[in-house]
Image (cartoon, rainbow, N blue to C red; front, side, top):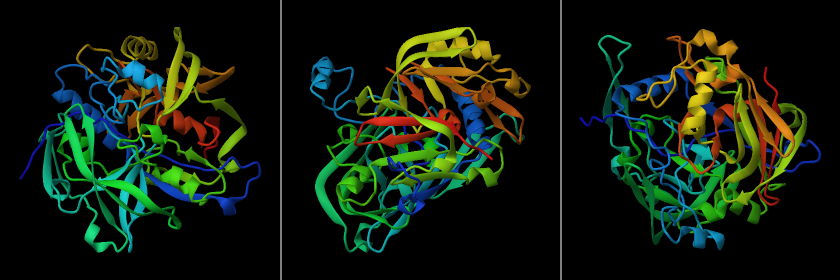
Length: 434
């Protein structure tokens, strides 16, 4: 039996995608993927279990060394990046990813649950003959229980390349770096199917054989891999993304995708109401008009922000990426700490997250993000993540030292977001919830 202690994972997470710059709402042109959401209590419990292991606040940047071939620590990085090359920076989920959906690979197809992640650009799943697919037992402490432990039995699925008549093995290898180590694998080429009938041919993806460096948040997660929705220049190995290939193969009506994430209501029915759609956006999912913003850089989905404000705390002139693979909102540690205090959360030096009394949820000030003259407001109650079974809550923002703010799932739940890859722009509108 293998056992692990809990460490922060540096990667991706998942969502609701809608493609299309649709001027008209023609649902027949849309490819829809239902998104499934990990229960809120699992995320909050995982945070608290991490706290019991923590010896200090994790360095979010150093623990997320994924994406691209150039490290920002490299003395030549700035020169190279000016030429439009790739970038390595870790900007992923603080602890866990919440949203996942199915992708099919091969002929006949094999199904995998993956994170559709706007913060990365590679598709990878476990290899069938690897440590990633070995059954194991994870033992983690949970001081709120007696006995104070959780015992979790896990088994991941892997891709059987020999079972696919269209699979081609390449001589190229991929290495994705995390703060705790590297996930390594080989590139393959095969047919990738999303939304059941959107068949992307000759798609390069990776089969990973070493999953341990990603830590327990991956090992016990509901997902088995990552499907990156960022730009091609962000991809490890200079590979074309699944969505870029879908555009090139004329499989979608418009070069857009959009996310609809259902509200937090703590029940399984709402957990499965989120949706990812390709080929156009659904006007029934949001209120008013979309506010379109040109990207400041087409690598991540990155925009320039005039200000981010909560209560009396304000941060001026920032860059921000919209990242479906991050379960929280991430910003500079000192600013997030000040905002957590303003919200009434508990701030202690050794806590990487900020607990907050659940009864304070309705008292948290709104978070206002101003982008190109438009103020996007997140109600304070949406900044509180709750475990409904144990009445435990945490503040939905975490501090680190990233080069930009990361607008993760809490933002995407509040704002329906459309990503236009060809025109390099994002559209925001207030999401319409039941």
